[in-house]
Length: 277
Image 1 (cartoon, rainbow, N blue to C red):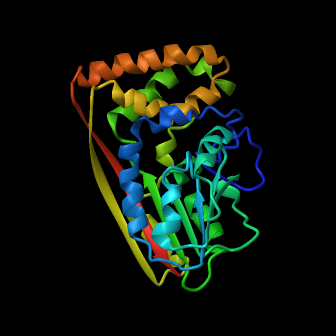
Image 2 (cartoon, rainbow, N blue to C red):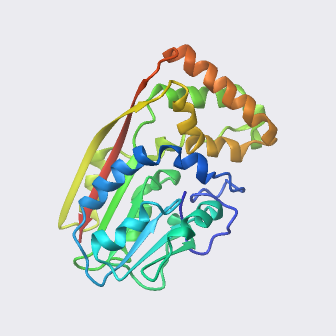
């Protein structure tokens, strides 16, 4: 869920092939506490920038973006996202130091260069991260910071189940091609470190982190994916009425894989990186 300047409000999270906004703020926020953990750690990697300008690219519902002005002492934070539905929710947090706008992170072109660029769980919605990061870097100057968190959980069985079910129904999707497994866009931690070095980072921190989540039940994993991964499949369906059956088959295979567990221990890998130039 997130941004880019100059894109239409009906696209989502930077994917040109997604033509409808399928993001559901209420669904996404079902796991707000769990999603906040990596953001808090990402923000802690940054140093305050008094009177500075920060962008949060892919701000989603804005609930975490709202923490940036105080944490980094900025004069202004601009949250950007491609989903108008998410931005409508984010608007609740707007104030004289925080505003939100439609924008595509893959085409980020601010009218004023920021002092800090933050992107939390959004970059993986686009491909060619080295090129996108180079574009972001072009708007940063000496002493400026970049902080990014990307999921790296594509090898988790839940992700594979979703991809397999979609592949089994290729005829349901536009051009008979299921959308890609979004999290496979993420690079390795060491590759991000190389990219940051090539972009002139004088300081950097890169880490691969496993977040342990205790969910109420096995099927909460599918509820989690309905807030994120499955938006790509929903948007690519020729007939959206097939979405409920798609989810039902994913739930069935998830239970076959894990059994009904209450609670369910869900591991989620993420890469966090910070650089100063």
